[in-house]
Image (cartoon, rainbow, N blue to C red):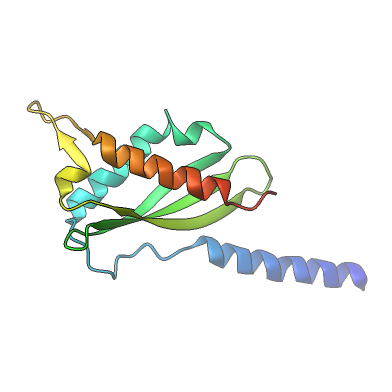
Length: 139
C-alpha cells in the first residue's frame, strides 16, 4: 500500500511539474517588436548561445521577447535546463533589460544583410543570464 501511495504522489508531482514547464509564451503583452523582429532576436540569441551561455551547466532557450521602447525596456523570457539531473530540471525565468529604445539597440544589420546582436545588448543579456544562473536552485 505504501508503494502505491508513493507512486501516486510521484505521478501527481510529475504532472504538476510538467504543467509548470509549459510556460505561456503566447504574446498577450503588447510589444514594440514586430513578429519578424522578435523571431530574429530570438534566433540570434539561440545562435550566440552555443558559443557563450550554453557552454555551461544549463541549456538556455529564448521563447519570448517583449519590448516597450517608450519605457526603454525589453523583457526576455528564458527556459534554463540543467544538463545534470535526469530527468532534467527546467526553470522558467525572465528579466527586464534597460536602455533599449529601438530595434537597432538589439540588432545591427550590415550592408550585406548579415544581422547580429549589438554588443551592448549582448552584454546586458549576458549579465542577466549570469544573475539568473547564480540564483537557480542547486540540485
